[in-house]
Image (tube, rainbow over all chains, first blue to last red; front, side):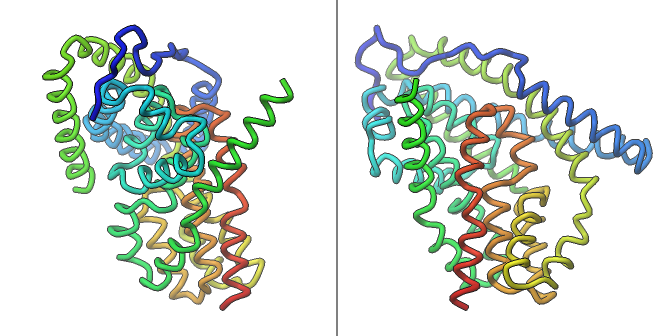
Length: 188
Length: 163
């Protein structure tokens, strides 16, 4: 692991994100609407039961999320921006997308970890294509989920066929995103 | 149990990372704390609302009927239906793979199962609402979902043609 060389260019940006934005308002509206529907359809007791269960789940997840966020926040200081750019930056080519896919497949964590890590990497220089390849690598080829869950429930031949057929998809998705972003850039 | 193991593994990695940073660049630690704090402030309310909302939505979906319907349908219709059910199936891998296994027993073919598991993986409504939309933003979610959308159908159709 390399330290960032130049102290004047701190790797990663701590872009201040708005605390309340459109996406947040949207999920609040969705939660209120579906909560109301549960209350009316299934009664206040079921509503209370689900609310307690999911708040509990959120509480149990918090330590894991904190660890993930700590790692993601420290990540840009463990590798120089140049190195991250070379590995998974906009000009990293197919190799960069393959690296991002492999990283997604290997990371042993659920969404509460993979998303913060992706945010951290993108803040440190990874492009949108690499971000999409990483998330796609995780959802399609995640080792943890495939080995622990999928093989427990589904026939091994099926799992092998699914993984084999999906192997190239994250890289293709990353390429499509890069292509799309480049075209959009040309138009503007 | 899975959460506990994951948490311990991640904390080990986090502590290792921080110890490394403390030895080699202790002046960077305050920045790491500040960034952690601002990211947590951003994430925590979103994850809480997302999880609660996704939980309510899951309750409203007739999950029990999914395995039955896609187990009994076949061909192109089966692949299409299975893709939709896959995207709608809430909960973690336990739920989706258990439904997939039950559908297989109920008579679903590999093509429909492939479409189901792949759709659940790439265009998962529950995960999109609980995590991806609030954390990554609308542009990331829409672009990624739009690009991934054909995959379940393509893989399902390939199996229909092959098997």
